Image (cartoon, rainbow, N blue to C red; front, top):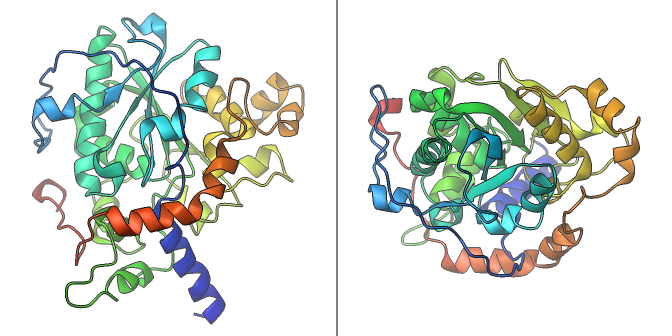
Length: 348
């Protein structure tokens, strides 16, 4: 591996470990709706490993709780180092509301820096909770960055979720691991003694991790209608195209729709072209189609917009301007561990 390639890969892993994506976006407080905790245990599913009271706290519907399938609920799952409000509150929440959907998101514990197997438990529970709220309806789910392997893990290892999930749309997914195989774990191993460099989810998102090996050997394919949307300009998930592959899924780069478009990892949560593809998938049983999007957008009209209607166009700028502070904050405040979390028995 050349020094340039090594440096690029290490930058990617550092960027991921900082979870730079969304962490300092400032949003106004919102009134969230409280629900009574329900138990959702099903034959064939492993234990969530978390008390029901804790599982039920993460699901939030800032525009009001959906009460039926007619409310068109959508579950949004954020990525590493972020929260639901930071990732989605100024982008997909108002944009989906404007299109007649009821967006809900989850706030994964520890800003999704902890064990991704545990994060997937919250995803699985929330899919059932949202379905229950709507009288048993099937729920579309959208993920960004780490939110994607969390969703895929939930669908694979909690098979009951397949019965309540209408479709899955992934933005900037990292479904294969970041960087050359083994490089990330070697970087995390640089810590000596009491010095640990990586949080649990950083260990797990490195290419060649035991986490991704468990996904691969346990039937990694599209469990529900799936569209994965990636960008050739992704500076965090590298290699981006490889990480967007999932057997049985529709895979589209934003540059397939808008050839000259630059969209980085951070920008995907507000990008108009990415949203147009995601919206098309939501409106067509989980399968986006380029020709249909072009027709609906009057040719390449969407390529002339930076953000979709209703989105806060300053979100990517706000995030990028705060990268330095985010890196320092994550490094100083996030618990680090000396090795990748062991794979749970149900996934071995």
